Length: 287
Image (cartoon, rainbow, N blue to C red; front, side, top):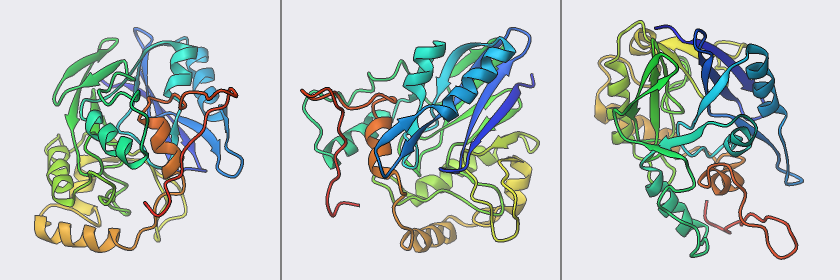
């Protein structure tokens, strides 16, 4: 079956969120929603998420799932806000527990922060099947960028998170805690084994030196033939060397510190302190 897909692009974080729907049953899922965040003031807003809510309302859809491809390091998730407004289950890969353990140590989180994934409503295992209305879907565990990364295959489409970018931009970085270039290489091979005409939807786009427009849809066949980092015939050793060389010169994402602390909590803020305010930590000399 062919899902109905609506993309929402947030230029501030270069993030693409999606509403994926079965138009007959009017059941939908939201993938990788963005919570607006002003880095300078610490204020959040819901303009991006409200645009998704407005669209779902206009289409008279019911939201069953709010799906995270991974715990993002470049934007805060609006999953908790959307669940409050729309209902549905917030889901992520089962290996989120590894990410939580890593960053609980990085941020020295209190002992009452659970590292068992219980902040999420559902944890997907590799190859697990599920439904969006009548649409058949399954997950592929595609780690490397982070240990918990998933690709959601829904009908003839797959949502790859940060694992791949558009063919002229390449692949995800692997230098975050728990990332690994060899693992990413093997994960991309899993995606490349899908049918060549499978539509692939990216979580980010930054344009490229060869184009001025944003883009986020391609196919497995196009990636195999034209991806500037990994195409058919690219060896694992060559990919690892390229990725390590490239990652060594990349700065940390602008929003990594606030994003991780919120996203490992499924979009909830840290517990309020005695003055009724939530606070985020900044680890000095860590990133």
